[in-house]
Structures are given as structure tokens and as C-alpha cells.
Image (cartoon, rainbow, N blue to C red; front, side):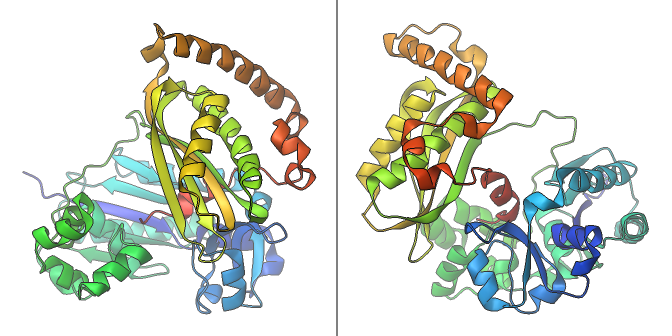
Amino acid sequence: MAERIMAHLDVNACYANLAIQEYPYLQGKCVAVGGDPQSRHGIILASNYAAKKFGVKTGSALWQARQACPQLVIFPMRALGRKTIRRMSDFLKEMCYGVTPNLMMEADDGVYMDWTGCVRDFGEAEYKAHELRLRFYHATGLTVSVGVSFNKIFAKLGSNYKKPFGTTVIAPSYWREIVWPLPVRDLYWIGPATERKLHQMGIRTIGELANSTIERTHGKFGLVGSMLWRYANGLDATPIKFKDEKFEVHTIGNSTTALQDLSTLDDILEYISKLCGEVSERLRESNVYCCGIKVGLRSAESLDWVERQKKLQFPSRTSRLLFDEANMLIQRHWDGEPLRGVGIRAFELVEDDYLQMALLPEMQKDQQHEQLDYAVQEIHRRMGQQILLPFRVFANRKLSKQDWTSEESSQRNAFRRA
């Protein structure tokens, strides 16, 4: 049986370096790509290495990045242009497909590849990684880092090990020497909150996590704890989802940062109403219904993000039902403290044909509401989102001026670690 060889290629500081290429006046400056600084909308999606030296981190709020680096130039993501990103991403995919068809894109700037059977051993895999790095650089002017290992988790870790423009091979014969001394936060899926809890357990390195017991980590984190223990011990066997396989969407959601902190229930529900409409449209576009809804609340003081969820009585995708259920969740769980942002997420999705025979009277009424939603969606499609707003939104002059460009599309690429 051929030795399992996986690779992960990551474009270094992708969005920031694309912005510098497109706009030469940014050369030599500390640059980050993110949301709109004027409306406090969004987060840092990428920063160049000059900015990283000052502590600017992907996923941090704009004001936090400004504090770390006062001279930081924040370049709006919307100004970068989707065509520029797509052109780079398409070339990356085409280049990697020349090595193996067994690949999986990770957003626009990363790709997993299964090289098993395509290269003889890890020595040839390292040579192939060098070859791809140089080819991509000469074609685009952008640098990439490549990780090669015997599983996806260590391949991902390897692509982060030597940045920028590095290749790291983590082979079965010596992986412990490379992986175990690393801080536990370097392991995929471990974010700041999980890192703090592991530190409280006396676990600061991946090796200490590996040498703990699965019973202990499971007792603290549940199934996630068992998964992290297996990852730390090199026991990841998850396959690559090949590019021709159908992508399965598990949730659909949207979130936004408020122009001003939300301190009353009416303020919160005005935002929730608009977000429910957007999620409803996206459910229809995907030809799915949801069986549950989550509400996300971000504290204005601590910036902590808390989610609460609820199962629906029957699958739905109407904005009215989503809003009613979200309203109940908020009134049950909101503690009255001001909020910086809110979000809605639909989960447990089922396809259209699941509901061909709607027998419950409640479902038949819901179908009538969906016809109204569809009419609103058609108006939005033809004339723009701002031409027709929910009354709650329209009645609030400040809220009606909110930039309703989806922050979800930005956040889904920035937060890959739990």
C-alpha cells in the first residue's frame, strides 16, 4: 500500500499582498485588508508582514489592529475586487490540478492535495513542493508556503511553520521532533478560548496535549477534546474531499457589526429582522430549508460572541418564522448588556424535495409566507437591497443607512479555528 502523503499550500498574506500589487502606493507600508473603518464594520482579513511585526492579527477587530499599529493602512475588502481574487485563485487551482486531481480548495488562498501515488516518497514530495512555490511566485509575484505530511492536520501545520515562502516536511519518522515542542495554539482548531482552558489544565505544548489522556481531554471538551488528542498524536485520517464531489452546505448564516452599540430590544430586533430576510433569501437560493436556528450576540464590552439555538417545529426558510424564533431566543437569553453585533445562522438543512408533501396546517401557512418572501427577493434582485426594507429597518433612519454587505463572507475565511 502506498505511503499516505498529503500537502497543504497557503498563499502568504494573500489579500494584503494582492492589494499592494494592485495599488503600488501601498508599497513599504503596514497594510491590512478588512472592513470599513468609518462604520466599524468587519475585521482584519489579512495583513502584510510589516504589519504583523506590530502584532496585527487576522480576525482581530479594526480598532484592535489600530491600537497595535497606529500607522496601519486598512484597505477595504470591497475595493480589492472579486475578479482579482478569482483570477489568482483559479490559477492556484489549475496549477495544483496539474499535480493531482485529488484536491480541495480552502477558500481562495489555500488548497489541500492528496499526493498519495503521485510521488514516490517524502523526498520527491519536498521537491514537488519547491517546484510549486517557484512556479506560483514567477506567475503571480505572490509567495506561498507548503506543508507536506502523512495527514491533513500536520500538512496544514507545516504550511504555517515557515512563512513566508517556505516548505516544511513532517514525515512519519520524525514528526514528534517538529510538532510536539510547538505551542498548543498551533494545532488546527485550537483558538484563544480553547488555549486558555488547556493552559488551566497545565497543557501548553502539543506534546503535553498528546501525552495527556483522551479521557481527560474528553472530560473537559467532550468529543472535540477527543479529536484534539488524536490530532496531537498524529492520528488524523480524514480524507480530502475531491473537487468533483458535491459540496455539502451544513449551515447558512449572516452577521453584522452595528453602527452604534445596541442597548434596547427594539434596536436588536431591527438588525435581526434584516438579517433574517437575508438568510431566508440564501436558503431559497440554495434550495434548502432549515430545521433549526442560532442567534449570535457579541458583547460591546468584552467582544465575546455567544450563540443560542432552537429547533423549529417543522423545516422552514421564511423570514417571518426565522424572525419569530430568533425573537424568542433573544428575549430568553439576552442579559440586557449592550451589544456590538448580532448574527443569525440556520442549521440542519434539508433539500427542497423533502417538503413536497406539506401536510401540517402550520406548514401550509408557512408556504404562503414564502410566496411573499419570494416577491421581495425578486425586487431586491432587480432593483437592489436598499429599495425595499423591513418596516423595523426603514423606520430607523440610522439603521437604514447601515452597510448591509455581508460580513459573513468575510468572517468565514478569517475564522478557520474554533
